[in-house]
Length: 341
Image 1 (cartoon, rainbow, N blue to C red):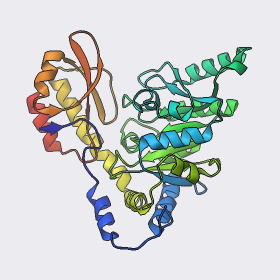
Image 2: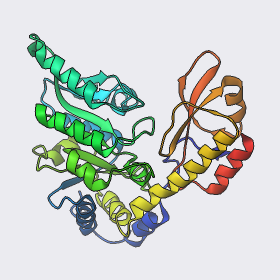
Image 3: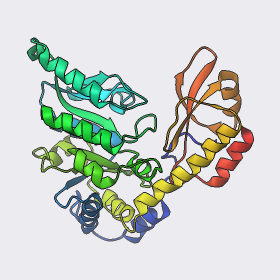
């Protein structure tokens, strides 16, 4: 069986796992007070070009989104997101259960445009009854998006300017950030993300770690008692070394960016295979997520040998499916899939 279902099927990159084994018997303080966590934070600050960044390590993406969003919003505020945004589709209501509404706006291939955001905020505050409505308290985007698409540097700057005008933070979900930064077609760097976003997270779970995400606050804007809030949400590890050691390894000698490149190289080869065989692309993604339209009968045939993800129904006889590569995808598996197409 060939696996192209997601980008976190494997365990951890061998260098990350090796560092965990190497440090396994060391007796270290808990809750992220160990030297590896401190080292990881310094390396991330340097990589972001943001020496004053405040960094926290959490267990996973859903917990991270819930902790950051709920901590930064007032009780009467909600979070703006594209209709396809992860927090509004595939996180089981984690934001809503914290008491905050996800305010969904139209999307363009997964992205929230500056014009759409500006129009909504202008209309909200132009409504004389807005005191009776859920206030827009922050903006959520992901890079890459749910469709593997990327924001440009200019688009991030425009969104940042609008958020600054309305004094609300811009939050970037970076679960797959490593793949976005490695894309050939991007002009966005990690320092750019740090410059334009008020808070973001660097995903580890999907980019070579066993688990864990690194939240980065860039504007001296960490919510009060944020560690306490993380613990309340069940996202604080007593063995904080687990995330600290992993991110220390990922940000040593550019490993985080190297893992992203493997996913992109194997994805590009797989895209070539689909094109050569005449398959229909649902949209063009520059990253490691590939969306293909399959005739339903062909989809069921392919499922006998390949694991991939259902995405959405296109019509009665066709389905949009997703093939994902990862930091660990082998080119030989891509060639085996190509032979089955």
